Figure 1 (cartoon, one colour):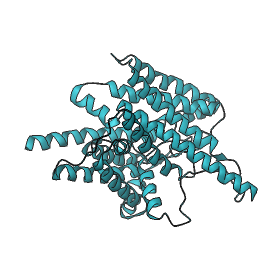
Figure 2 (cartoon, one colour; figure 1 turned 30 degrees about the horizontal axis):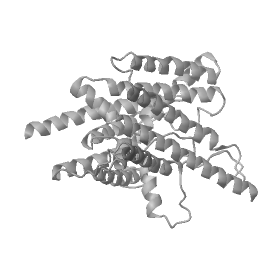
Figure 3 (tube, rainbow, N blue to C red; figure 1 turned 135 degrees about the horizontal axis):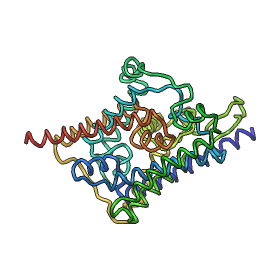
Figure 4 (cartoon, rainbow, N blue to C red; figure 1 turned 90 degrees about the vertical axis):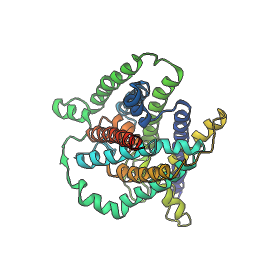
Length: 371
């Protein structure tokens, strides 16, 4: 009984820590206007790479943090959804494209939706509800059956796993921790250097976004993979990651957690429904964004402009829910957390998201030309 009480206490600590780190993400994203869709839009429409450099720096910092933790022995870098041996290339590509197209229709991805809710956007609240429902349907419902019967069947295996450092270890026999750190320093360091070399990039908000968001992703890996890791559960005698929905260590991602949040709210009185890592991070981002909006006095109620604006956001939210689950992550889940593991699957998903976003921008241009 004492062991179970201690385990429950530790789980509460893990969830509070996850909430705090997610709130930091929400605050930074609100303060700096960090947004993957916005970064792609700036490039396509204005040729401005500033926000993409923020994003690249965040990936670089997160990768160095992730594999640095692995090198120190604080986490097992092979225990994530992104580093398994099964490469779901078609799911990642198609799901990413659906997500990318949808985020353009809603003017932001899942994380931006949560950030905007904290800033007073009622239409983002509607997107959240639609996206969460579509995500749940793709996890357990009708679109989930379609997903498993089609794109999920197109896979191939890499014995060493999906992460680049594992390939180096398999080919050379180099220690896994050292191989991961070296790869992260080279690839992540290159991204950080590219960001810093950008014209007029060296400004406080840009550095806060790149360094801060990257550090948040790494911190979440520590919370889930070290603080929340129990080598032997007192009942099952098996290793467990406390608060995890996937059974593995997790960092930030927002599509499936939106579904889990709705499920927790709907079945709140069901004693079997307990708070999880994903649910508290969804709430944390909203709270962090709200705090920033109130401090900066930027909180504003926002609604839909007209019927077409409503329709586009509804369709976009549904596409993000379906696409994010199909691709096993969103612009944060695959784009930041996934890429921090240097995963091939994550790279494929990000390529799909970018491709879908470009198509989304062309669709919006077509709508404008029709007017």
